[in-house]
Image 1 (cartoon, one colour):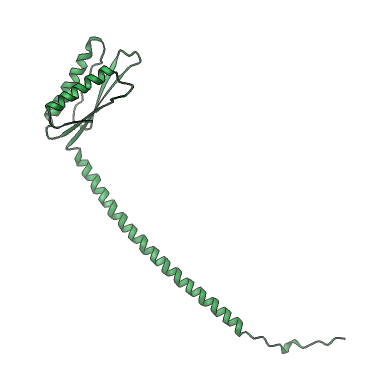
Image 2: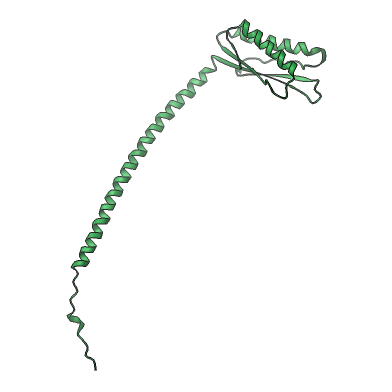
Length: 173
C-alpha cells in the first residue's frame, strides 16, 4: 500500500503572485492616466474646432447679409427667346432680379409682328436702365441654345450692344 502524504505541509509562496498582480495594477493605472490625457487633448481640440466653426459661421452669416444688400446695386436681366414646334411662333421672356420692376408682356414674334417684339424688348430695357442709373445692370440671354433662332439671337445681341454703348451701367454676359 502506498502511503499518503500529508498535503497540509505544503507551503505556497504568494510573493511572486502578488508581484505580478501589482505590476498588472500599475500598468492598468498608467494606461488609465494616458487615456485620460488623450481624451483631454481631444476634448480641447474639439473645443477649438467648435470655436473656429462658430467664427466661420458668424463670418458666413455676415457675408449672406451683405449679399442681400448687393441686390440694391446690381440687377440681372435675362432674356429668353425660344420657338414653338411650328418654328414660326417665337416667344421672348424677360426675367429681372429686381422684383419691383414691372415686366411687360412681349408680343409673339410671328409674321409681320417680329419687329414689335424687338421694339418692346428694347423699350423695356432702355427704360429700366435709364430709370436705374445707380444700378449695374447685367444682361444675359440663352445664346448658343438650340431653342433660339439665329435671327433672334442676332437681333437681341444688337439690342444689347446698342444699350451698352448708350449706358455706362450695362454689362453683357
